[in-house]
Length: 297
Length: 244
Image 1 (cartoon, rainbow over the protein chains, first blue to last red):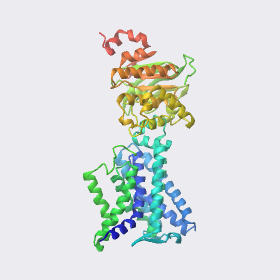
Image 2 (image 1 turned 45 degrees about the vertical axis):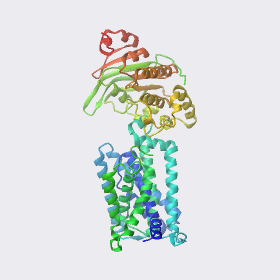
Image 3 (image 1 turned 135 degrees about the vertical axis):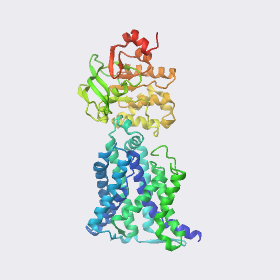
Image 4 (image 1 turned 90 degrees about the vertical axis):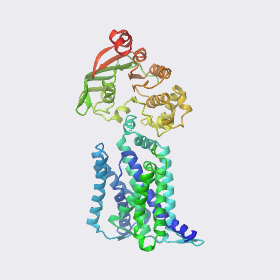
């Protein structure tokens, strides 16, 4: 097991890491403003992937248009979830919110299984993304590279937005203290909606990336990435956007390396890795790897 | 910042307000008037309903009965952010600055309802009033001292150039000399035309500053007088000012 092999595995993991980073940022932002672990986030991700798949295969759109349609679909579902599932139970306690989001997650997934069956549907990949290149002995696909660069750019843009714009500052204010933010003239509900819009849009991008990377979509596809994204958010110190993004990459790379070092019969154990990480984190560093006592860094 | 100070005009009125938390009624039939340009203080012991009165005005607690009028418009029933945007600045009990934001960002949130072009103008005025905040504009609010946090809370409330500034216990936990400095600033703010409604435990300091004062006990106003008259009142001196 040489260095080339490890480097190769890390590069292979870039796209998975990117998807987890995008999901983790959504989890952590929504948690920040609402104190809610939105377990339906994996389903919002799945809906983005389905919308893009349908836009390409059913309606014949190009990938960029399909991506926009995916974002619109996920954002709509995210906003509907907030308005009709989470807002009515706001203020009735963490457990209620938690159960509501679990119910939404299972409900949406089951609905999609009813309509589309539980089998995988093919997600077509345009030819211009199928290129591969060699760096010495290391092989990298164009798709992997593009997903990674795209994710880094989105995350950077988002952190600039959160840091410098009026809306971004208001989001951080609401995440710190909703009541005081209201008393400064901020409509916290509209800030929460804005947060769901951003989080859901990121999930849609992740969903499309997933479809491209693995070539198929299915109703239950959001389950494992959803859990991994959530664990990445915990690892990053929940409420911490940069931490969530970095942790998403760490978990993606970690998952791939975990399997790479195990004999191949155990490759099905990949999902186990994130749970091990979660246990270790909760035991030894429940505040996460990054500074998290101060929200929304 | 100078406002038209046609006196004797009621800026804020509370009429027969009943309010509380769930089934616990705190305010009984509370009525209050704040005239334009005045400084009005509510004094009283802990837990008699002073903060509840303010939270009811701001819509953080909904009044069960009665009417609240601000600038002639009925405001009870509106959401807090709407009430605040109609021209009320609020400096909450315990400052409640956004500890995760720096001083500048806190002020920017205070100006949430203000246009961008007015923002820099407001910022200059507020920095002029509290030069220390300008020095610390890039510092995280949680790292400020108690007095600086109080200044920030007041400055933040002033960012939208409110008609009415409401302060809940601005001197709480501050060294006397800092409290005095804060009160001097309040006098200055009032002279520039902002009406002030104040809740204060430091009764002698508050009465010196105010035009009018209410004494609250068990959710009711028991005295309602000119501040200078109340300062001479035997009962007030004995109960609230520690003068035998």
